Structure formats: C-alpha cells, structure tokens
Length: 294
Length: 205
View 1 (cartoon, each protein chain N blue to C red):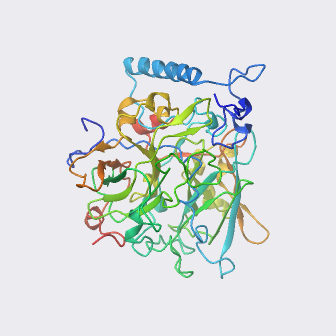
View 2: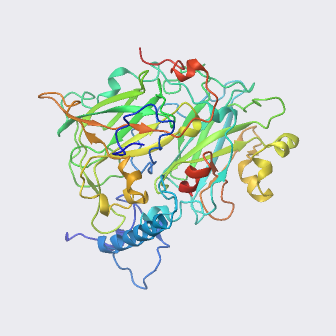
View 3: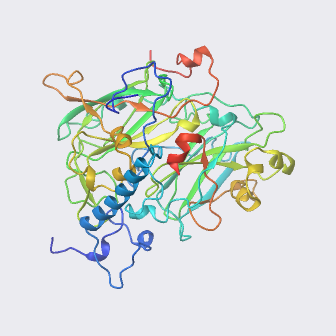
C-alpha cells in the first residue's frame, strides 16, 4: 500500500471524485472502512449466484446491464427506481440524425497519426460491422471511440492516475460506416487503469464506443474489451451485465486475418443494435440514407 | 444465433441479440463534446430558443458529468435528414445536438420549438441521457407546454399518471426558451422510456 494512501478517497469513482454520490452504500459502517476487492467480489458473487438461480428457474437471459447495480458505487444514486415506461417509438424516434463526410474526415479513424510522432504501445486494428437486430448493415452512420493510452492514462483533467501521458496520443477517433456497416480504426492497445470504486479497483482494458443506428431508438454507448482479460471477474462495470453470453458480446476476437504483417495486430468486433421499429423502404434497407462511404 | 456470441457470421438470422450498452464513464471529454455541439441554430438567430435544465441524482444534487443528446423535427414538424451536425455551417438545421453539463449539472441547447410531425400531434424532442454511474443510456422526451388538447391526446402522456406525466413537459421561460430538468432518481423521477418491450425490455429493467 503506498505511503500516501488516503482511505477517505476510496469508494468514489473517478480518481479525484468526492464521496457525495457514494454516501449510501449499505451496510454503512460506523467508522469508515475501506472496501476491498474481496468485499466487492463477494457482492458480485452473490448477484451472480442469484442470477444463475433465476436462469435455472426458467427466466429469460438479461441482455443489457442492470441500471441498479450497487457494486458500481456511482450508480447507486444515478439509476431510476421506477421501471422504464414502455413506449411505442413515434415519428422522430423512428429516424436517426444523418452524418457524412462533411462531419468526419477519413483520417479521424487513425488514432496513431494525430500528432507529430508515433504513440507508444502496441499498434492495433479494430474493425467490424455495425448491424441492426435484423442483420441489416447500418450504413453511413457515425462511430465515435475514446480510450486510455498504452499506460492506462486518459487525456482528461480529472484522470490523476500517475502513469505517463503520451504526447503523441489523444485517444479519440471517429468514422462513418461503409455501405456494409463496416468500420475500421487504427489505434494503440489501451492499458488497464486504476479507479476508486474500491481499494485496488482496476478497469480491464477497453475502448469506449458510441454508435448510432438508423433510428434514434438504436442509439448506444458501450465499451469493447480484449479477449482473456484477467480483470473481467473483478470489474463491477463489466459485471453489471450479469449474463455471460451478453458480456461476451462486448469482447473482441483476435483476428489474424485482420492483422497486418510487421505493422499491427487485428481485433474484430461486430456490434448489433436493437431491431428496427420502422417499416423500411427498399432503398433504406440497402443503406441509401445519408452521405455514406463510396 | 451466434455460437461464440462475438463475431456475427450469418446475415440470414431474422433476429440478432443486441450488444449490451455500458456507462459512458467520466472520460469522454475529448471525444464526445465538440464545437457548437449544442447549437442546432446559432444563438440569437431568428426563431432560436434556449433549451436548458439541470440533471439531478437521487440525493437532489446536480450531476456534473452527464451528457444529453436531443433529436427533433424542425419548426414545421419536418424530420430533417441533413448531414453537418459535427461541423456546423451556422445555417443548416440538422435536428440533432449534444450538450455535456457543466460543474453545476446544467446543460444548454440552442434550437427551435419542434413542430408537430402529424396534424394535431403534440410536438416533442427525443432525448438520450448519458452519465458516469449510469450503466446504460436512458431515453426520454421533452414536450412543449402549450396545446393542452394535443398533450391530453398524446399516446405516451395519456398512459402516465398525472404527476409522472409532468416530468416530460418543459416549462416556458419568460424569454421564450424552455427549461426541462432530468431527475435520475427519487422524487419527481423523470419518466424514462423502453422502446423494445417484451423480451428485451425485461432485461433493461
């Protein structure tokens, strides 16, 4: 444990976060006690066991994260307590904003050329397709990504993790999907990074993805992980998806076909949005909307 | 179905299972915000209004790291399909914008009052809410406070209890703008929407 360790700064989220949004952690100890990974892992196991029992009793798998997921302490005061209200999407919700090459330059998909030199770390290619729930490619749509550098450090004033900033790496990219829903980024494999959910909390390496579909109802922000990460069982954000098959959908595949000789390792990750609610015309189904890739 | 759950290998499946969402986290600051992101129109331009509000957590404290997106028809109720939201030319109304809240939890957009997309329909703005600590994005709507008849006939609003219904209706400011707050939890909790229902809706709780 480092000498400058301060117990009162733990059980918060980002590294300089105050404790105001983690104040109602049950059970509340009379004197502050630092929550350890063992405490968190016990909570995660209890939730996992309860979910396994539900599956055995015939409940349908849960495919999305739980909004109410106390092991991620910052969610405690930030999740709705009432169930989401079912609504039939109407008019504007059945369309999506249009993005095109006015919005995104082709070079924005290469995160390794944004400065004067090469960033440190393991160069990787991350590529795949964006599909809707009916298997149709999401063509001509915006994909945004952001990530930590190879040392696990974000360019952000509130990231105080004492790992080096890489002046050659901002960790932000964008692209517009091709007619087949394809996207491709060149970047650096991000490092794991420590956070203050509890003592010795580390996030598995991940890349944040923001995606639009053909309808506003399909909008998602998520995180892509790398295969075989030993931090998966310990991470309350990954574990907020209680179903293993659903978690696996966030993990990229190493893909040697994508790997380029003497240049970069390739990871494939396909993203499926929810199903379309709109009656599609043939042109829309072929991806003729917007100002998409040639 | 996808055997490995990762690489989608068949296009013939009628239904694929959606990829789960995850929290936007705290560190989106260099990625998602951009110049004029909340300015669907240039501030002060004819017909423009300010849309603003505060995002609150369950303790009633402002949330300083939330981000809102709005998507709306133009003042005539037309759904716009124009590019240019990320690099605004100052003239093209694209109908979409993004605003990250400041330290005090306040977001601000410059936009127009949305028109009705069908004759007699209650105009609304579609909203997606993101925040650190929020495991998945939340959908909701902002209705204009005028035209009680249209509001009363709206399929969504009329399916809600009167007190909950009110959480989706903006207040009209003296300057003609709109104020609409997001309460993620607790008293006055905003109505958040599930568009999938059935099997998918169960999961998202």
